[in-house]
Image (cartoon, rainbow, N blue to C red; front, side, top):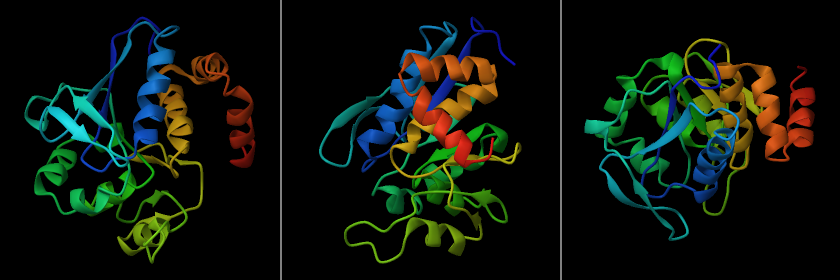
Length: 210
């Protein structure tokens, strides 16, 4: 496990059409966690550095592009309606395939981008469960069609290969889970308490039988 002051970088991978809640749930938790884990920081990575237009019209700035992305201890692939474009984007797929799969994690439909890269074939994984709006198939069904062992779960992590978190607000749970992997459960629980999410997180762990 890492020391609280040990330099640790989490790269959050975004793209046009990403859901703002996925960015907030990952970057927000990491920002708060840095108050008790002073070596922790996040970097936002997109295909190109600069403005990225999210679903709903919010624009955020990516600090890095794929070409200059820093070496990261973990990479979180976010979700949103833009996932379909990214699932056919050679630059995105090539970038993900070049990463250590044990350092990858997805949030929501970010799992479908990992699946399109061939990184979840035959592996247990999760994503958003329900179809929304004009969608005809649930993301979970699409994940199964990609060859993953799709599960309804808050977080799926077999200990090797990419981990995944379920839909939308579970970006918080997924990021807390990642912090537990990096720093241990005590540090994870301290961060959950810091963001006043400890009761919700405990309920999710109970649902997972942990």
